[in-house]
Length: 322
Image (cartoon, rainbow, N blue to C red; front, side, top):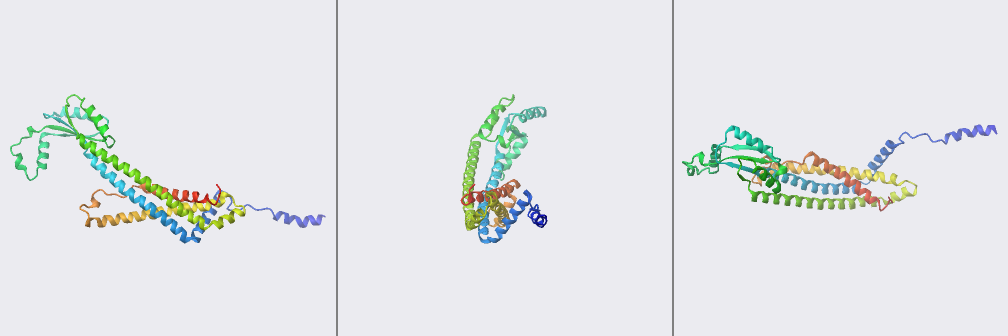
């Protein structure tokens, strides 16, 4: 009996499983990433189609963002023309100028205050009549008013803010006549609100279309490997174990697609800058045209990753019960 125990004891000890070197969260994550990369190499054509779809979809969105960002910048530059002018029928002493300037700049919404003397007003008048200066012969600076030109902050250039600013301005002692191009301000803000609404509608439509296209494309990828999913489920693999490599695949596909889209957009942007002078009446390189800010670029990458992840997650529902 003792001899039997001695012979069998080594066998019993050898059945005890030693800990795996890659076991734990880090080991599992490494396995899932390796499995995802293997799946990408084994299904090159389908994955290329998926990445290409994500790239094209995000390129359209990024191109729209590029146009919208530059349009917003142009509108912001145009909005610099929204200013309030206060006229006086006499020259102001330096002390009066300083006192009025301090009161005006203290009003919420005021950005810059510029005093225009009668001599400066006459020089500007002559500049506008360049080539017809003879019409102003004998005109003395005394016939023109002095003024304060008040530039407003960008957040205070809509119709209601401008009207509120003017109402406060008129209550300052010594100020009587105020002009600010009321009709121009209303038209400008109507145009600005229309462009923002149009941008929001087009952006929402593009985003919904992108989610739909990417989700259905990734669904083809999952469908092509449905047998693999069924086999994994039959041998006892957990839902998370089955889904994790596919979710990582979606993240990789979305990241690669977004980076390619940004690279293509940058290439198109550079080509446009170099060749636009031949068919445009202005030079885009000197007109303030700019590429997407870094926060927009980061947003596109995050959107691509999210699209890949969500597309894989929704596509897996058909084959793996969540």
